[in-house]
Length: 140
Image (tube, rainbow, N blue to C red):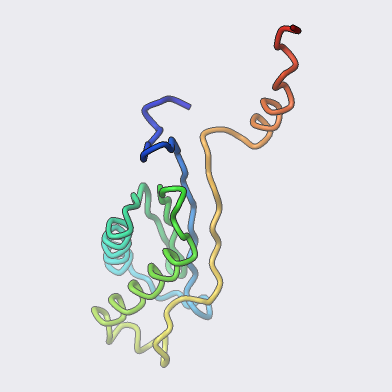
């Protein structure tokens, strides 16, 4: 991992990235290209307010993917909850007539979500690195 990927905050150096997947309630295929663009803008703004970086955004008709860089002290469950709440409220307000065809209740997202950590290397590479620690150090 290069030093250019690292961020620092006081006495902490880090590079934490999370892959978040949000799925529409009942897996309804309700997102258009315009709605996905609006969702990306909203997610970018929410992440900015939380001092995070939205590195990548993608989606299909029934789900979105976000790649988020965050500080180690970040309360991820609160961030995800805020992303879901704000996107649901704003996107359904802006595209009210469109969403009436799909939902009769205010919820846009399923209660569940998928949050994965990512890194610059594979888990297997990290395991091998940790296993080899201390094996090549000089005896003394």
